[in-house]
Image (tube, rainbow, N blue to C red):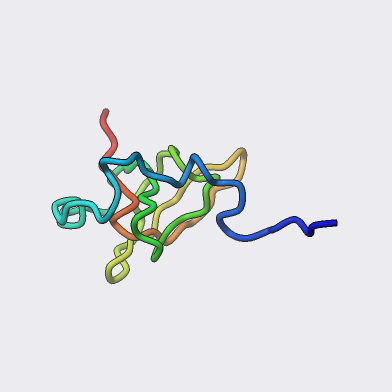
Length: 98
């Protein structure tokens, strides 16, 4: 019997993979966006950056920035009835459209 893997990126073959023409690193303009406390952001995981990557269950969710922490941001996201606090780098965030 083969043992089932339980890693952080287990079962993410299509979720955390890029299309052929978008492979590699993203443009630096994505990192240079200025975020403010209280701003709403969408979590869109960029598989080209492994640091500061949130868990796959938060892909596509919207949260509110509560703190700025070095290169990362502290984001509050609701997950069911619970409110989760995530530390995510800017590469995996984008401003939410109203």
